Image (cartoon, rainbow over all chains, first blue to last red):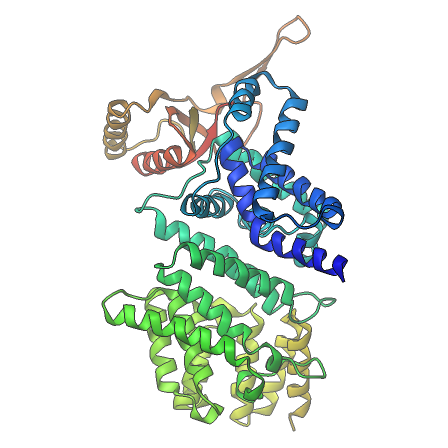
Length: 413
Length: 107
């Protein structure tokens, strides 16, 4: 029992303290590499020592102190001349614990540096999951189905670029903040989506490790930037999506479309939390703050999750929100999703005309063909529908989605 | 900290008069702000000579060491306190000369 409790304490400390330890060491030593390695060593030491010595009274302080010592040891071992001065400062500069606000600020710096726009998206994702999320390289490699050394190289190269180019460790200026925040949110949304609709024939259709990690990190950013509307919007969007997960894949491993889901199986607590966030943003919008795309997507999901039965869905509200979204993001994928809502409001024929106009842009996208297949089915155009299902099945990468599309196709008369 | 901002183009010395005006204005600005170290345009790669004197007997090869459609047609060397400042300067430089640029830190 004691062992279990210690393991539990270590897991908890890892979740609560990893980013804090890495962030404070990065500030102190000015080097992500040193910070990461020392943090990892401190947690390894905790695994060794806590079962015998007991869990320290303040695990965060213990981990930070231990990691600081490890970092100093490493810099001494390497004995670089230009580090000598820094080392002297480190040894005599025994900082008192930082006030909470400053430490929180440091985690924010860490988040921003990991998703710097000069880094490739895949590097930003790997670096964020490693440095902020505390996932190991093998864990990240498994999550994205890439070899471990690929992930390792991405992280190493990103750290080298940050160091050589002197990418600053600070929160961006107010003028740059919206663009930089949206860069951070794009990384987290990508992680969430990969978890929510995992690709690859050999993977689980939903990867809860990834959706949970994305939500955890978005909650952290929400705590650090409580006034940012898009942060709240993305968190609400993730919560309202995650809330439906139990109803989203059938016992037989098939994707269940929103309209056919058992709504009693939705997670009421997550729905309520998501709705609270959406209401908060609606109030801000009423006060004249225009919503960004995550807030609008969250509002669309709030409309869906407010309906006890799919027949109660306020489709005109959904279409109105999509109209707003199209103004911000006139991409064909948004137009496709809007068309699905239009099919509920104005019928499949009107929607099909809209969808057909998107062929040039979306011919290689499985959801385009799946949407067409469904609309054609509802219009009793069986043969065309079958052909569209065939193409959608060929292009879909998610096992549960393929199973759903295959059943639908086979049900056609 | 110094950064090299290379101007990428498939022609040399091809700036239009209005581009030249914008480049001059940008240069004046970065001189006034203390970012200027050096800048210049380069003659086309066809005029390059590769020199290899590693063996003691200098070998001369006519032409560039790398043939490519696009090449470095000019550059700035800029002084900036960090990458984000350099990135903004590079973005402004790209806009001024109306070309792609590549930002690279000095060691």
